[in-house]
Length: 467
View 1 (cartoon, rainbow, N blue to C red):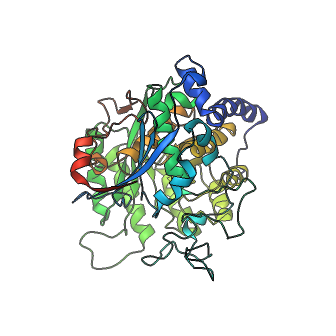
View 2 (cartoon, rainbow, N blue to C red):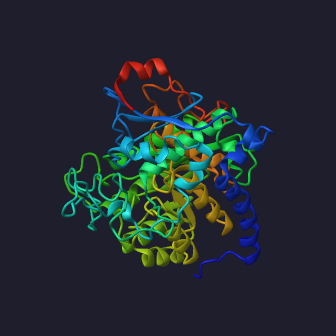
View 3 (tube, rainbow, N blue to C red):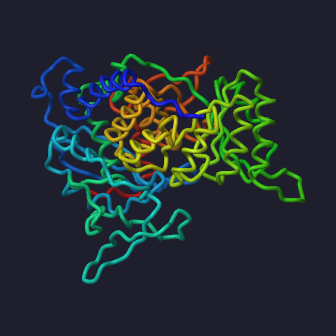
């Protein structure tokens, strides 16, 4: 079957929305001032006085994204502090050494539009890098190499160390790059500050086409990778009882609990898919995310079963680098493909959209330039009439970051919540993400990222603060 391409009318309609949203990203200070009816010059002094890293001992807390206990802070002359946690998915060594010359002494309104404004490098560089030290130098630089299943230490601090991609010969014309986890973390902190200075949640400043009118998002429960086929059907029953309106399977090895004979993983996954639909009922929203486990043949077999059982989407079925395979799979199936967590450049997103290699754009904000870059990706999808589904998986700040994107984007409809929800609870945040009785998560009302740090609890777990 031929993939439906967006019409010129759809494209132009989306482009108007994108232009409005991009104006806020290009001039965040103006957007913040407009939100409270003042001129940018009337805002308080937002010169950055200090950057800091809180090193914490989180005890028995188990992070979904491998959080390493580092909380970064950017502090203005007026004492406002923006925060974000490091180590969500990717090591970010020596952030302080990067941040001091990049940020200190500069105004938030001047530096924020420049940090993550470039298009980025083409290619999935986030999982392709090894450290090496060029002759006569002391720091690691870029070296190609597949490190998706890297050994300990390999890939850490490689392409994304303090000099990012300098020396690799792979720089964009503007001198910046995606992914750059250093700049992405700073971008989130600076938006947090900007929201606090005007006493508004960040999503109300982003002007992504919704004008701050969205105040809640429907939640679906997102499973962990369970060891047995039989673990999923009972869980979806609990999910429904907890008020969620959907459930996404992250399949494990696809084995029966008491089986002595191994079966192929995708065959076990198909049994999970059938059991979950039977347990959930015909009208409950279900999705399936094997996180790139399948080859093309397996993906087609699983995808056709998902079509038959009316699943809502198929996420990251095969390796994202197999673009031709995704194009073929998208053409063979009726349900939409959600792809993008393993794309690291806006040019890649544009290419995958234009060639029909995805139907819905996924993104991880850490990989796509924080809030600023992610808004660009989401509005690019909207310009083509496509939905965008930010990836909510991690601690309180990680969920908060992606929630603001969902609230701001006109084409984001779901809030992904790890299940059980307690997996996202954090030692120094009082707020706990939970759906209400109707299945919604409500927008924050506090300024900035909207979920204040419990400073007393942070003090208890902080071993030292580097400045």
